[in-house]
Length: 271
Image (cartoon, rainbow, N blue to C red; front, side, top):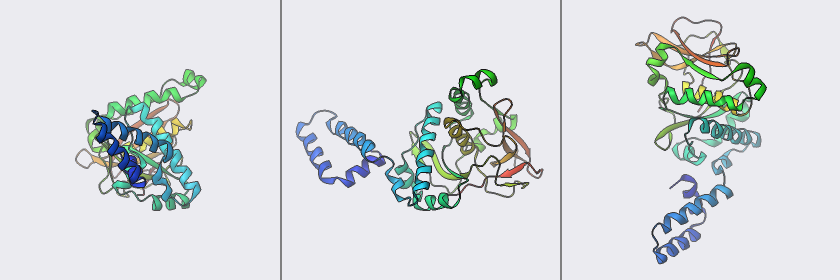
């Protein structure tokens, strides 16, 4: 039973009880499931994103709704289904606090991100995002691409792991988090070593880029690098994210953890 269906049953217990009784009387195979499907569909029309009601600030609520709409568009490129907002709330995401932080910091974006999908799924999704580009841009610059350094490819599972301690919702067996990510063109703080964290995960960064592309916006990190969570090569290397605007390519490269630079920065998630 979906979180939304649980909500509609809780809000209208008498109606749900009457429908259950009617299904029992008819005793038709699948009747109860059919009625629940209809209830769930009605809930989708009448109470979309009910969890957002906990967000007091209207502007922040609108930004979260927009983020989820962009994430759903991105998920179509990945062939995955994101959890409903209510599933994140049930997993422990505090939408009231999330809304308050969004209201106080316009640079943050709510990013629902899946983990454990694997490199091939992300590569295909980035390539599919090409269809969101205007025809003239697509013909001139070609397809979007995701390119991984050999170390990142070899240890992709380290970069693809859900962050410890974050609330996790599940959809079709895939774990998802919902955190606020600084989404400016550059990381908010530059010149930091990898020890300064926690850092944004690779799936969150890739989902942020796909969400931007779904909205017709330009990807971030075209003039900077962002450290990514997860140490590689027995702790010697860290991965970094950059967007090559000239080739429309998201590159994940690796660097020694102690080798910082003025263009390397942190996008510390909140939530």
